[in-house]
Length: 428
Image (cartoon, rainbow, N blue to C red):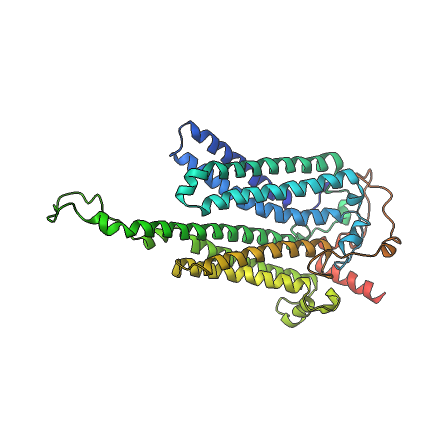
C-alpha cells in the first residue's frame, strides 16, 4: 500500500461527536410524540452532552491535523519556521481549491462547535423556570450547531476524496515504524487540552446552575415556616405532613455536582500540562526533569524580539490558570455558594484563560515559538520574494519513492532526528 492518511487521530475522533449529536437530536425531536418523561429522552440528552464535549476535542485535534497536512510535501522544516515561511512551500496551500475547502471546513466546524456549546452549557446553567420558557431556543442553538458541523464535514470530505488532502504518497520504506510517528505526542497534548477545555466549560455551567438553584430554594425555604404551620393549634399526629420541607436548600443544591466536575477539569488540565512539558522535553532531547534547561527554552526572550512575554510563557500562564481556577470554582461552589462576586469573577477569568490558551495553541502549532503573542509573524515582501513556490502538486505515485527520513515534516519526526537536523542546520 503506497498511500495512506497522514498520521493523526482527527479522523478517528471526529466521528463520535457527530454520531452522538445527531442521535441525541433525533431522540429529542421524537420525544414530542409522547416520550417527554421517558428514560429514552434522558439518554438522548446525555448523548447531546457527550457529543458537545467531544466536539471540542475534535476541534483541537483538527487544528493539529491541519497544521500537519499543510507540511506534507514541504520537505525538511525547522520547528521555528513561521507559518508564512511554511505556506510559501506547502502544496496544500498552493492548491487553491483544496485549501479553500479546508478553510471552510475549519470555519464551519468552529462555528458549529460554538453554537452547540452555547446551547448545551446555557441549558445546563439556567434555572428550571428558564428551561421551561426558553428550552426551545436552547434546542435550536444545538440543532443549528449540528447542521453547521455537518456542513463543515462535507467540505472536509470534498477535500479528502476529491483533492487527496492529507494523503501521504511517500513510499512505506521512507516512513518510520515508531509509535511516536503514528501517535504524535503533540497531538495527544492538543486532545488533552480539548478535553480540559470541555470539562472546564461544563463546570462553569454547573456552577451557575448550582448558584441559581440555591437562590430559588432559599426563596422557597423562606416560606417554609409559614407553610409548615398547621391550620389549627392541635396538630393531628396521624395527619400527613403535606407541607413539610423535606430538605434544606443547601442539601438540595449540593446534589448538583459542580464541584466534582470542576475538580475533574482541573485534574485533566494538570495531566495535559504534564504532557505538554513532556512534549517540550522530548522535542529538545532533554530529560523530563531538566527544569532549568526547559524553562530556558520557554523564557528565551530572543523568541519575541527581546520582550520577556514569549508565546510559551503566555501558554504556561494560561495553563496554570486553567488548572487553578477550576479548583477555586470547586471551593466556591462547595463552601461559598452565596458569594456574589467571587463566582462571576472566577468564571470570567477562566473564560479569558481558555480563549487565550486556544489562541496561543494555534500560534504555537502553526507559527512556531518565535513571534509576538498577539499575531502571526509577518515577513517583508522583499524576503519572501526570494522563495519559490512548488510547480506541481503530486497526488499519487506510480512507483515507490525512496526518501531519507529527514524529509519528513518536523512535527512528525522523531525527537532525536529533529535535534540532529536542527544542530546540523545551526552548524552550517
